[in-house]
Length: 309
Image 1 (cartoon, helix red, strand yellow):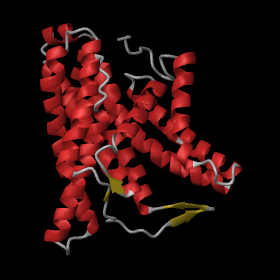
Image 2 (tube, rainbow, N blue to C red; image 1 turned 180 degrees about the vertical axis):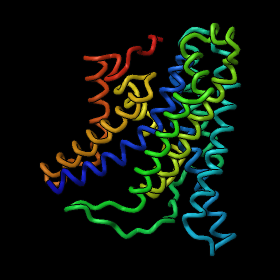
Image 3 (cartoon, helix red, strand yellow; image 1 turned 180 degrees about the horizontal axis):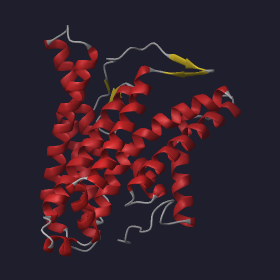
Image 4 (tube, rainbow, N blue to C red; image 1 turned 135 degrees about the horizontal axis):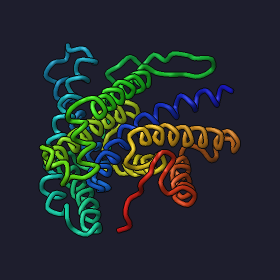
């Protein structure tokens, strides 16, 4: 039971981060039917930007509290990622909006590789330690352990997802998003500006990715130019798992994927005496993807799936 409780906590933390990234995938797909494979690299840029800000502020203002530095770094990371994703959408995706489905897909993969290369040039390819800015004393729940950073991840994700759901369902921008997703041409006749709505969607997705990147780096303690690839791929799996194009599905898929991965790797390690464990956790995500695509291609809550390229 101690192993189960600990892995449930780990899974919820991991699933929260997957859910934030998966929402970016599902929003872009829901509005313009684009699977933005560069989204994981936006997460990476957010994490590396936050690292740079933190290192600079610690050198310039050593007396500042850790939480203040972290908040400022998060704000800067969100701004940088928002500008980056806006630029990517305008320059790389918008000209291909009416092209065959394969063209934007290949462009997204190429943009992912380009962002990795640029990050390697700017920040160098070596792993960098992400400073610990929050208290490290653990809290005990039964036989399980949870840290302040993990509590912050869970609470930040809950607040962020609540605000996003309110934005999409209760605001004029959210109504414009839903109208554009339904039919961009008809929405334009009703006074909606589809280009503006799509750009806003990419900006919101970038902010979610930046938040996920910062909390990912804070949780694992390292940043590097390839760090966004695997989380991005797993978040895409989570979006497909829950039903890509469905916001609630992205959250459910992210949480369930995190729980499956954490519980599966935890019990695999316990049953094999540590011989097999966390290093094999990635296989669970892709087993889930294969099973879901085979048995229910639309996902748990989805009604539509991506068109075949």
